[in-house]
Length: 274
Ligand SMILES: Nc1ncnc2c1ncn2[C@@H]1O[C@H](COP(=O)(O)OP(=O)(O)OP(=O)(O)O)[C@@H](O)[C@H]1O
Image (tube, rainbow, N blue to C red):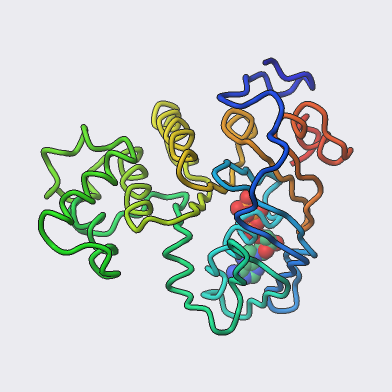
């Protein structure tokens, strides 16, 4: 389908014409405020993220997309002077509950970053390290099978099956990013967060990752930050537009791109600012 606003000429990929009526909620965000020191970076965000869907976060630089993404697995805990108020729930469990095991949260919520960041270890060890540490598998056959499964799940197996002992860092950028995705799915998360996962990649590697995301959403809930609106239109089921720390509009992707309700959203997607 061709976009009607004249700016993005793309087709919507693999998505129903009308969204399902009753989606199940995987992540519930209520009245979320975030401060870096005195500076408020997120203002009372309310948003439900739906199970086994791709949700894209878009908006101009500095609007809070990455900050919001990092709230979901508490990566912002690692930032000094960062304070979070409000509720982030995964399957109804408060991620910021004082008794919650943060390591367990990060195991359920995997993350893939802008720059592929394989460990300085072999391809095999990149995948096996966390599952062995978390006692998900035992060394040997069980672990070998998991490594194969994760690499197949990330559409990388055929390219690396004969060189599993080679360093992960020796792969191409696109292969390294798929290795990082394989590493994320190896611990069997529910949610995968992706922070501009293709911005460092060439168009062919980008297409492979986008196709991979469409495969992965059969099993995982995916939230992706992207600067690339065409990418959001191609792959996302839902899209959220942020501006200056506010969630301006959130809807199924088709509505947001073709028939946005807010003037600010329309101005952004038609290239008037940002
Ligand atoms: N560690 C930090 N300490 C202080 N301020 C920060 C920190 N990280 C982000 N910010 C500020 O918070 C705001 C939101 O930043 P964030 O990186 O979340 O935006 P973004 O929409 O992801 O931007 P970009 O698209 O450029 O990555 C910005 O004003 C930024 O300067």
